[in-house]
Image 1 (cartoon, rainbow, N blue to C red):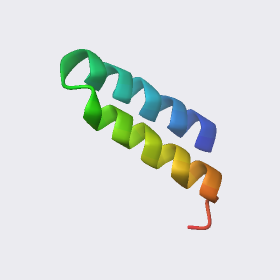
Image 2 (tube, helix red, strand yellow):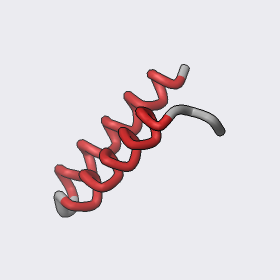
Image 3 (cartoon, rainbow, N blue to C red):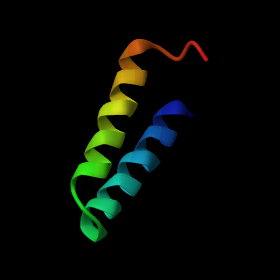
Image 4 (cartoon, one colour):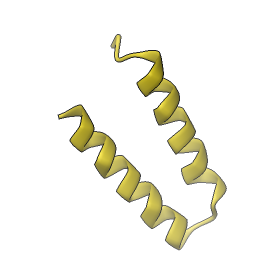
Length: 42
């Protein structure tokens, strides 16, 4: 379930890369990876 959600987040970030600037989705991806490696405590 979390993997599917992460996949949707990555797809949305890629679409944002295609439409908008490159920095925002990269920050979102970095934040998502930090949360992923930090652990889903919440």
